[in-house]
Image 1: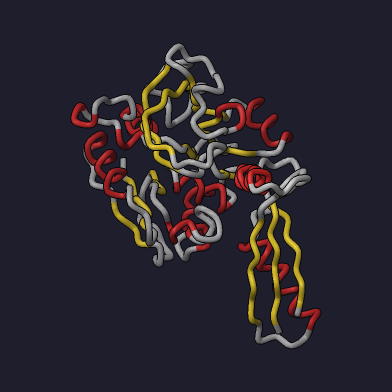
Image 2: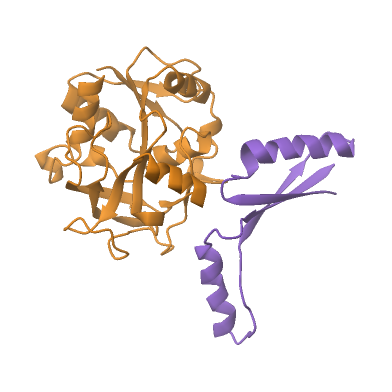
Length: 79
Length: 228
């Protein structure tokens, strides 16, 4: 089973990379981009076949390693 | 005073750190590789700067899960001193020994230059050789030194005098212009609630002798020598 973990900065945490990206569409003529937040995507190939067990173990991994919950949120999708 | 310096893959300031301890305290530090699970009997454990694990995932994130880390936590729990500099500070926040996080510099640029620091708390084991409010010179070299903590944590840090160093101008004023990385309230270094764990982004180990252009960083090592 594959798990896809999306890690994003929490609201209220300044994202200078997102801010830098935000300026670029405008200079290419793409209007109407009000805000950009950059995150990261981590894909895990798991031996586990049980969804509930997989979700539990990936949640544990997120809390302990994949996200820094001081500044980041995470979202898990099982594929 | 006996000291140990942790070494992780990708760290590059461990020799500078070891040299500072040797020069100032006269005792050769013990280098400890990250796969060890026990620390030698020392007073201070230093976590040096560099780019552990290439700064992959987050700065310090992977080093903070190394085999040696439980021993570092045990050392802190039994009252030992811990000094984390630059990547070492990032590692200490990732282990949870210090609160908050170090984020990408607000400028998005790696900054390598000298800054001024104001000693906001001279009443710690790391700063007793300085006076409160003293302005010192110190080199910095980092891309992710933008200290962040939530409002509640900041209130606790400020209330307890745990902000030890702040970026300032030559007159000791905390200004945006003097802040090299966007750190909240100009925070450059903090201690934990026991006052025995210090994390700081600037490199005091790189300003300990005339050859390096000054000795403003010696105070940290002298203070530790007195405390331990």
